Length: 379
Image (cartoon, rainbow, N blue to C red; front, top):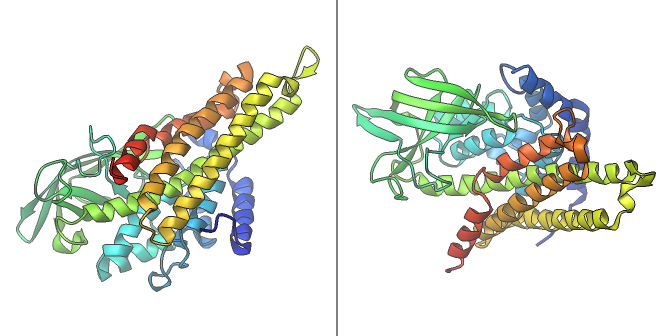
């Protein structure tokens, strides 16, 4: 398994880093937060990302994509993570990949092609209250009604859901919550009657919504894939999105570490640079080790899924468990080593700690993924 970047990937990394540095400094996130911006991110900037091909990376050329893989996507999400860019690249790709894999021709024409072009933003309405990362704990119901279905339920914390143009909704068409069979996926455009999206504000200032479905009517043509067979699609799509998120987490912890290292070289106490203190050097060394271990874990998981390896799911859990712990550790250390100024809102280092906490809880925390890894390996 290749764990170094190719020449093309190195060029992509430089382009992504340059673009994000120029167009999306962390100060932009602060401004969006403080102003309670109506959208929470920039649609025009998202369109520019699409023009660079970012939204097309993991999709096949037959679908209008670039035919690349997660190894390339994590390069882009890492760059976004360094700047805490709030654009919904990962959640939109997550939902669009379900349509690419199981959608009918009409769905692909109406939603997949525009999503790949960056003209439409999609979101996956997956989580349930009390589900605790278990994809099978779907209690939202899809009841048969004439030639279609009627959806009832609530979906909290829909990442990228505020202002999304359409949602892929996981609902139960048979069996009980906790059963892996009986889950179906439905494509529901925003503005559909009896569909209500309430914006939620998270501590990391990124975009999400509470989706309420109170008798939302959908037709047979709105089903993504086959009835009762949505779980395998969800599991695969969430694994891929988890790796993309790990790329973003890697970028965030890299930036937090870099900023901390610079601070250690500049800040003086009693006329001495604090970077000369051995205790802080040891802590900085551990941060570096955690960072490099995390990078290897992310690259291994991305390439395993790209290659269709049977070890892919287990490597995803290794990466997410490692990144969840490491990002929080590095962000916490960064705040502490910045001292009093690091505890204030006026300093940007605290934004990375908040993002670390949100990422930790997205698609499963470290404890969940350690347990999943053990289960996948027969323990």
